[in-house]
Picture (tube, rainbow, N blue to C red):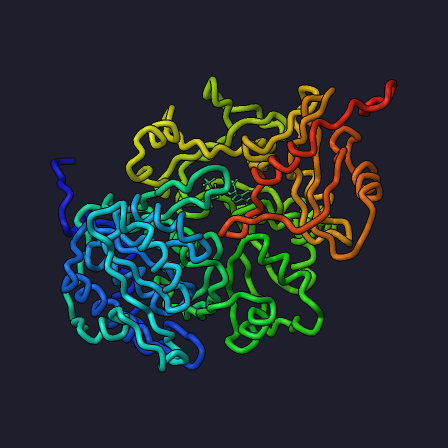
Length: 551
Ligand SMILES: Nc1ncnc2c1ncn2[C@@H]1O[C@H](COP(=O)(O)OP(=O)(O)OP(=O)(O)O)[C@@H](O)[C@H]1O
């Protein structure tokens, strides 16, 4: 075969930055971004991102520097996904719902040099930076993003603003493309559901692969109209920031995600695609009739981030949404598994279809392997849909590692697999189903009880808006399930328990029920560790009356 060598002609670095230039060339006049009355074309977005990249160099931001943003889904936030890495810098999108203390510690941990702050979140950023002032020698510079719709024109800011910065930039800037696809494109912090958020480093290659994966696995058409309901700050909008550009699509930006806004925008902009955690689905499925609008054409919804209860999937399908379920972590660029739909499931009854759809699925095209393994022996569990093991993946869209945390990185990659910390089973058809996070599984009398299965039953109760089940210490069984429920209308705890006992093996039904609103993380996930503390504070549930069996 002779000797062949990798060269620029046959082996350029994979990077999603090329999607933008391509969109500008192939569909430059097509609408790239919509926000209120604002409209941009792909040519304009390309030139604005080049301006941003060149202006960053002017501000002394260089290759490898971290640039943070604190902003909702607005055009500037979209542009940063290209403009910041086009300067060779690393984009760090921070969750807008963090408190000032956590934000300060993440800014410190990331070594951020500059923060783009949306005007609404500027006070939060100021507070975070003031907390940082005693801890770091050089504080990050702040650039304010004024309301791009011009509603805050009267307010004056001490900081330089985003649009003025762009005006100083060069629209023809010869932007940076990495020579090595392993270079870092972004830094994303995990949601902090189980512990302190960890800083996850993404490479250009993974971002490129996962973007193309979504287009293929979700069968995104050319020029898709995509509504931004998933936060761009979460895993770079699950990589759709880059994927929409690859398809020359239209990004419909939305500052406040409410059911009314989502239905209005779907109708107004003929939205075809949107993503979100089950909490978004729940919001749409339980919206008052006055806010719900009939869908003008099919709307494809990709959901993930937490287990979607089958009853919510059913309700969404009744409204006409076409739901695809995916699973993943910040460490896997968002999605690592897709519940790839099989034609033969179309003919099943609604309930059965939703049960299939609630399974997490098979490896995406950007993940080479996904398995359920015994983490102590690193052997695969039997494909029986029953034996529980840890979900592990390896592939192109797995993080580089955690920032400044070699131990956690080594732990996460031990044995040549990425350990997700989630427990699941492998079904005979090769589909993975999650049972719990390893920290959430309830062990009662030596048996594993999946809180996800109990929650699925609770969500089918007509008066349950949200539910989460955690372990409560038990004098006899060690732990028993305790359900925390947010109701739509008053019902008794006994009737909830009876409802579960009719649908689950007796030992799986909750022994205790607590009503009230559920605590959530900044990404909208239910904070089970808070509920576990509350369940613990209830004290050990007393021994059941003598002679009462669990079965
Ligand atoms: N489709 C899904 N079904 C069930 N659980 C899911 C699904 N998608 C994601 N998850 C859960 O979300 C987790 C990944 O969440 P993310 O990366 O946002 O941070 P986190 O794990 O919640 O936070 P931290 O790692 O800081 O505790 C997965 O490990 C899994 O437990």
